[in-house]
Image (cartoon, rainbow, N blue to C red; front, side, top):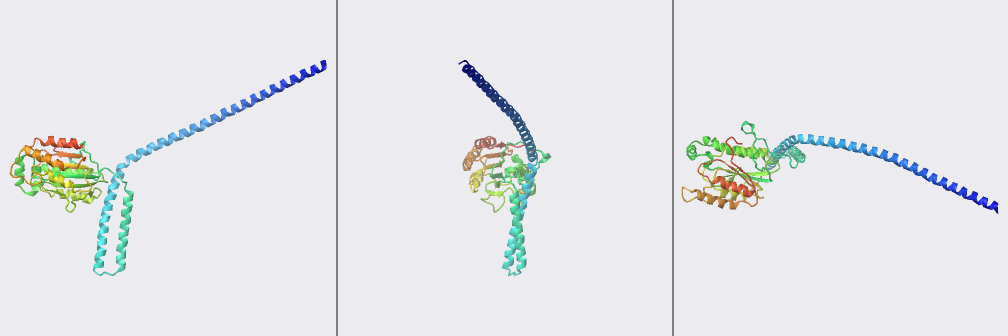
Length: 363
C-alpha cells in the first residue's frame, strides 16, 4: 500500500513539470511574434515616410510648374489673337479662290489641271484654318488688341468689359464737337477736317478705340452711332454682331470712326430702339454721350427745348432698354445740362453698370 502511494506522487510531479514547460513555450512564442511585429511596423513606417517625402517633392514641382504657366498666359493670349486673325484672313482668301473658280467655269475655262490646283489650295487653306481654330483656347485672352493712350497710362475705371454680346453706342451729334455752346457754333462753321480734329470729338473716338481694344477675344460686338437717327458704324451689318477676333474688321471700325463729322441733335430713344434689332440681345452696353436728348423718335416742334423737356425725353427713352442689362455710361462734359450727370448716374446704378466722367487726357 505504501508503494502505490509513492508512485502516485511521482506521477503528479511529472504532470506539473509538463504544464510548466508548455506555458514557457507559449510565452516564448508570444515574445517572438511581438518582436517580429515591432520590426515590421518600423519598416512599414520608414516606407510611408519615404512616400510622403516623395509626394511633397511632387507638390513643390507642381507649384513651380503652375507659376511658369501663369507667367506664360499673356503670351498664349497674344498668340491666340494672332491665330484667329490669320484664320480670318485665310477664310477671306478661300472665298476669293472659290469665286475665281466659279468665274473660270462661267467663262468656259476647261483646263481641269488649273482648276484642280485651285481646289487643292482651297483645301489646304481650309485645313490651316481648322488647325488654327483647334489650337486657339476657347477663352484665350481678355483683350482683342493693344491700345496705348497718351503717356502710356492705364486707368482703373471700374467698367465691366466682359460679356458675350457687347453694344457700344456713340453720340455723333454736333454737341460732341466742344464743351461750350459758343465753341460748337464756331466749329460748325469750319471745314470738316477741322471738325474731325476737335478735342472733344477726338477723345470720344479714342474712347471707342480703347473699348474695342479691351474686349474679350471670344466675344461679339457692335458699334452704333446716333444723333437724330441711329445706325451701325459699318454699313451692311444692321442687326448683326461682329467678331472681336476679326482684327481686320476692328481696324476698319477705327478707320470709319475717323470719317465721321458730328452733326444734328440727339435722340437716345432711337439709339435704344436700334439695340432691339440685334439678335441675340446685348448683355453689356456702353453709352458714350455728353448730355440728355434733345428729341424723341421724331424732331421737336420748335427750335428750343427746356431742361425739363430733355429730362422727360430721357426717361421716355430708357423704357426702350432691354431688362437686366448693365449700362455703362461714359459722360463727356457739356455746359448747360446740369441734370445729365445725375440721370445717367442713376441709370448706371439701377442697371448695375458703371458711370464714368473722364478727364481730358483719357483714355
